Image (tube, rainbow, N blue to C red; front, side, top):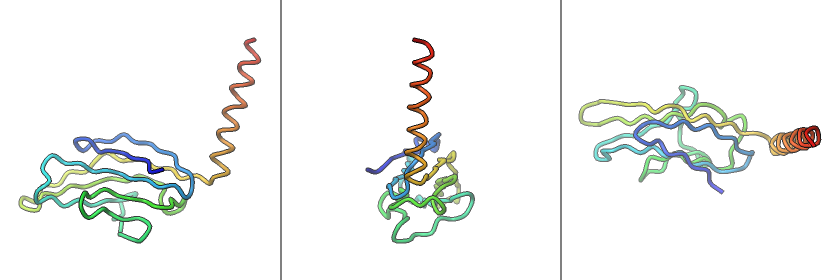
Length: 123
């Protein structure tokens, strides 16, 4: 399953939680696609293409395969630059949190347990 986030008109208020190993696609859409260069940052550092995390050459979307807690958690931003004028705009951040599978499972179990206790207390 690929989770998606679309930067609509440069704004995205995405806060996502993934399990390690899942995939994620962050979209960066701009109104004028001609002569536009798109780049990505993670916590202010330029995201470089690797076999696991790369920018789609046709759309500029950032694709993350096999999410890793240490490498992919943080604040992603998309930057669109008009090549002719040099004008650049940066999106709001997309906050991504990658959890270990066991942590995500335990969080869900904790939530279900809390709901059961609350329901029992009101019955």
